[in-house]
Length: 220
Image (cartoon, rainbow, N blue to C red):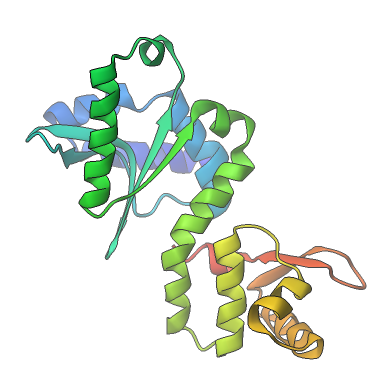
């Protein structure tokens, strides 16, 4: 299915699973900015919404509840993704409200969350940069999944480099990072292309750069 169908399935599943205040917050809190993030940033990277929770409820440090725009949760992983609009409410925010907002974010970090924030303008005007940031932060854990594969140690390290960088890598980068010869690097890169874990990003006869293939991007 494409984005529209998967998005509707994703939202319907969460709407049906909620009641009371949690349902109201999802209905009223998930709006254009959040949908745009899913369409322009998340979907082009992963083509699914597994492990992602919209308007996720967490305990507030003042013994109340607050809601995160999105939570990405897997065993040992908790990532908060926030999309901040720039509107009159931000211009008119008081010094106390500003301090309270920072304290809330600090508390999430103390509680073990990784907090990633994007502005609406970033999501709208520069989604590729947002994709790179998401890929880099999730790649910290996705790279660990490589240990469960039969890839060689060198192949795993090349993929980890590509995952952490979040964009194309060049043979010379691999050489410098792993301190390998040009001949060895060419052989490893060719092996990863054959396994569909890397895809040539530029060049035909002489490939100048590579990007991650779907075999690596989709496991999350």
